[in-house]
Length: 435
View 1 (cartoon, rainbow, N blue to C red):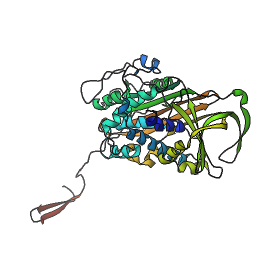
View 2: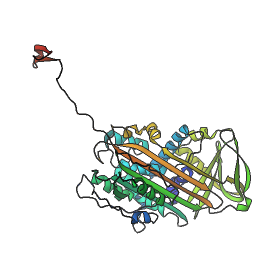
View 3: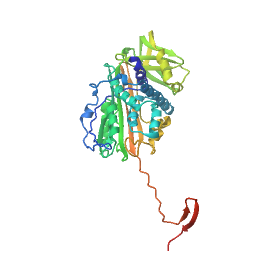
View 4: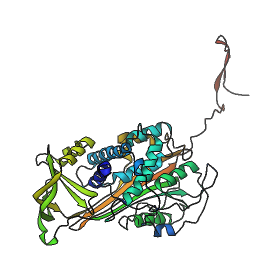
């Protein structure tokens, strides 16, 4: 089992797949297939209990976690990471690709026609049966949440609907069933509506991310689909703070920065190959790890990132083995990335239709499109271990209704009387005015 999921777990920690907790649904839904109950009350217990693993009593069928889905998520992870590196090549980047793909897969439940096809292509779901996809997420999220008792890893999902909106029941139920979503109806016109959503995100990320939604919420926003992830893990073998020293770090822009460098010597999982060195630093019981990959000195970091894909990632993993007497030095660091609007990045990867009035989310409701996908992630790495959090918000709007076609003959016009069997024009005229 460890072999089966090591690919997902490793890319998770390399690129920021670091997770939060699941919550139970809090809103009753009408039996009517087209709408949700309009309810002003939001259960206060949900935010209080957000960091509890509420699915711990449910059975996890690990055999239903498809390797195809894991591979798709990993391909998407490299694709979105490389796309962001193209955009932000001269700055730090840190994301949770699993958070992004989870939030988008929640949205995918309501996509149809060419919009669904474009999302499937971007997310890597072409050829994957939807039942297999959903079963995988249903079991993968709780599996990850309790993978290692010595690591705190929590994945949370929530869905917020503007009060009064008609959202299809099948879409809401799918999110509850497969993503353990908390579904809530909220008056977005309330001044404190953003605060309620932001508080949920804050609680889900152990207060590491406290503001994703700004006030006021635009009047045409009808829904937010949110994933939040929180991770805290101690190194299986920690660094001694007394060995940490100040030294120089050669930044990618040519500057020399001062850093606090952690170090230890001994047995380390180390690998090297064509153009790189790598180490695997396990957390807790060793089921999760951070991989640090160092390109050769004559290779720029951006050029190296451009070569990354699942095959090269597998080669990096395969190169790693326990080696004795390795001198390991790793900077102590803390970085924050975002709030990043991923709309342009996802459009570049092929799902641009979802962000336009041509989008087909008929499985959710009429004339709905994704207006923004927002992402924020933070990480701190020190002698004890790592703490990280991320949140992805999919904001959905109601498209303006197209103006109905109008023909108003209130000015001069031509008229024709024709025989449609032969195409013979029998009469033609122009009405220029009426006396």
